[in-house]
Amino acid sequence: MRRYSETVKAEVKRRMGPPQRQRIAQISQEFGIHVATLYNWRHHWRLQGEVVPASAKDPEGWSTADKLTLVLETAGLNATELSAYCRERGLFPEQE
Image (tube, rainbow, N blue to C red; front, top):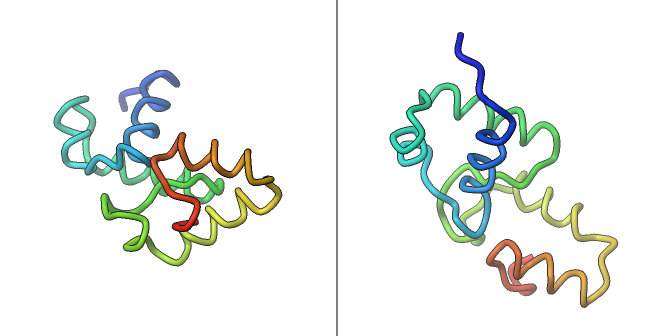
């Protein structure tokens, strides 16, 4: 079993999440990581409450679980913090 560095995993998570939202097949091809490994990582991150959408769709197409995670992450933010959070992830506050 091949081990991947935390740096590689962090880059993969960044590319899976907003605003990049790259497809797993694309990430797999680029990094040479088997798609099953990437799906396992995404599943693990989602169980930890990370916002890692199940698809490359715009936020309107996200699952209910992804939307709930986003709402929980932003619940305690003021307007300035919410705007920064959204900018960082390529979202609009209205989509949150």
